[in-house]
Amino acid sequence: MKNRSSFCKVSTGMLIFALSTPALLVGCSSPQPKTEGAVYDTGKVAEYATPYVSYDANYNTEEYNAIDESNFKAVATSPLSTFAADVDTASYANIRRFINFGELPPADAVRIEEMLNYFHYDYPQPNEGEPFSVTTEISACPWNPDTKLMMVGMQAKQVDELEKKPSNLVFLIDVSGSMDSPDKLPLVKNAFLLLCEQLKENDTISIVTYAGSDQIVLEGAKGSDSKEIMAAIEDLEAGGSTAGSEGIKTAYEIARKYFKADGNNRVILATDGDLNVGITSEGELTRLIKKEKESGVFLSVLGFGTENIKDNKMEALADNGNGNYSYIDSRFEAKKVLSEELGANFFTVAKDVKFQLEFNPKFIKGYRLIGYENRIMDDEDFKDDTKDGGEIGSVHRVTVLYEIVDKDSPMDIGSDLKYQSSAVTESNDLLNIAVRYKEPDSETSKELNYPVTTEDIKTEMSDNMKFASAVAETGMLLRDSEFKGKSSYDDVESLLNSISDIKSDTNKLEFLLLVKKIASMTKEQ
Image (cartoon, rainbow, N blue to C red):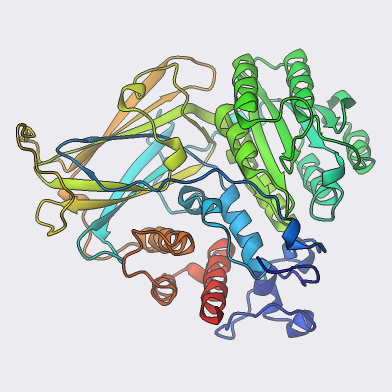
């Protein structure tokens, strides 16, 4: 990795604003993407800028779980594809942080499903009485002429009544010595101060910190006591080792003490994940959080910082604690997660959400799920209500992509059977999408089914499909995936530029600029 000890960090989000203010970029060493000369005034520069840090990358101790990319499966032998929903977005924001430093991310930091789910898509609203809608689209695959690309889009309903219910929130904040950096505790404070602006009078707020030991800074304060809450946040200082497990236990204990049976109960953990005292292994932390979640308290994990973040531990906590995981690299991202998307991230409309797709061998001979590697489940776990799925919040969107191999494709996926044959149904459905979920206060699942037919095959990509395809293609290029086919950043950029409204969406425009920057970096290598 490059030495980043004196790097002027300019985020792509900041670049969008800076297009109209060239002087802001004077003295910064990062290469700037070319633009078409348009001006996109999207907010204050301070919100987009990533906090300045100075360090030696040779001391980088970041940790990521290894990703074993899914291969193609033959429908004849594996007709079912089962996985848990995932609405985490941490990977995309973390990738952006690397790119803004002038570096490519490690392959295992690139989780394509989290890149996809960072963005908004124009999916239809759910029918009356249903928690979400599910739509599909199938088109030619941009990077592989022998496959088609299928997009599955889930749109959760907006529950205004849910967001009006009182919240019982415990802010669990890492104040250990490793958090003593401008992109850590100071940014944590900014993030929670933004959240304080969203509090309702009847909310209950507690603050627990942990370093060498845990400390209850504030307990049971009302949302109307915003000055007291904000003062407690402002006074936080970093120092000491990191006894995160003790802080987790205390936070859940307080959450149970002030539990609101008809409200939103949640622990919000802010950390770099560098736990080094008490329970520190990923396995032990997973067992701890699985036990604590039985109390009915949900979890949100906010990751901060560079050089020593333990992404693997933060992801494991969120995945096993009825929660979600976001990475905060700027005030802009904090505002997105804790203000603009507050309902989606903190108000659950369905828990233990699972997908199971059944492919019809009459039309499809193979498929590959793109991303979601750490959410894949055994097929028999789909109907097992004791097996954990994913949590979906108010107005959340879940986007899933498959490469599918139709029966006429010349692609060989090794599906020939010598002694067995696959039964071919008379149905004209291409596949069926089954979704199981639980109401937030229930332990019994409900199931919905969505058949996919030839009517879902499109001759031209919708803007939704174009963007999702471009994101997935970028992820495969960053991972140097064996399945990237004829992908290139030039093709990704062309696909993005063909989207009619891309410049009206700040986040999607930022992604276009990010792709330009990545392309420039790879050409220089």
